[in-house]
Image (cartoon, rainbow, N blue to C red; front, side, top):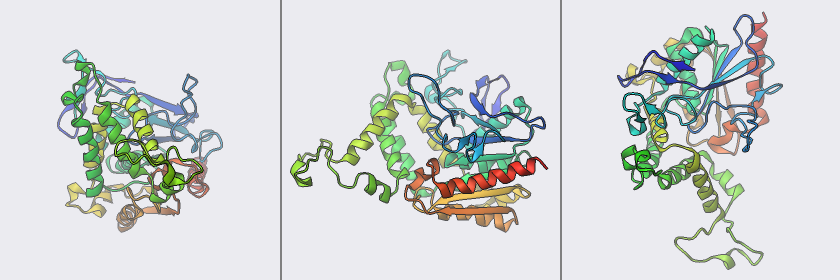
Amino acid sequence: MRFADGLPLRSGASLAGYELVYETYGELNAARSNAVLVCHALNASHHVAGTHEDASRSEGWWDNLIGPGKPLDTRQFFVICVNNLGSCFGSTGPTHVNPDTGRRWGADFPVVTVEDWVDAQARLLDRLGIAKLAAVLGGSLGGMQALSWTLRHPDRVGECIAVATAPNLSAQNIAFNEVARRAIITDPDFHGGHYDAHGVLPKRGLRVARMIGHITYLSDDSMEAKFGRSLRNASGAGRGAELAYSTQDIEFQIESYLRHQGDKFSEYFDANTYLLITRALDYFDPALAFGGDLSAAFAAARGKRFLVVSFTTDWRFSPARSREIVKALVDNRIDVSYAEIAAPHGHDAFLLEDPRYHGVLRASFERIAAELTR
């Protein structure tokens, strides 16, 4: 969907002539009251459910959750997922042409924030004729967007479901993001973000950035269960028998796995997009304008209903951070339910099919659906 009007950004810049790509699932009811907006995380896109019938048969990143008969049942809800500005999956971003220069934006694309994405999503909903969402749902960075919806457009949201997220990033999380960005920026092929003009891609930096990120998405237990200390070329002779005693070769299966993930990521993701999105993560902090008082920030969400979900082994967005959100909501006497799921998968748990987790979400959406028919 093309937008000619300029979108004011929090940085003070304005983005004109931009495009947002999106997918929808299910049907909008006659009252236009059954829409659910799903907000995506760092390296995801608008393709949240179903399967693309192409050579790769790309499955939606939350397909286990969304569809007919699934917890977010598309027989009852009209589900929308919008690709965020700055992405490399269709919406206007660094890989698109800057109309002012006739060249790709590259590093000149303006800095975008979670709040900018939410405002852009609101404009798209206006075009679709949807005045109010039955719910907004997101995990991780998507959960930050869901929270932001209740603060920037509270009258347009019935319920907020925020999964595996936080009210802001910890210093440790910002540090992980900075190391990943530095890996990209110091790649000799980065060229200050204008690598396209040089006909190259900073793949080495992207590989390392993805490896760093992937480590933080998994728990120690899940890594141990998947890989342990298994050697890449181990035989029945015992672990020690296959060691090459090399400082540079791939020895362990976990090394092979991380390099595979990095290689794959570097083939489809844009480096400038990675820098933009991780910065948006860093900048999100609704309490900042209230002197760090999160309860004061969430006063704008009074009258809304919330479901907050966390996972016990998620050390990047720990349950303690979710409980900060819950406390701020309780301080404002806001209707909130909280579920802390004992799952071994770390941060990635929010993407996986867990009967307890899905049961919580199914119950919430069944209640919302029942209320729509009253």
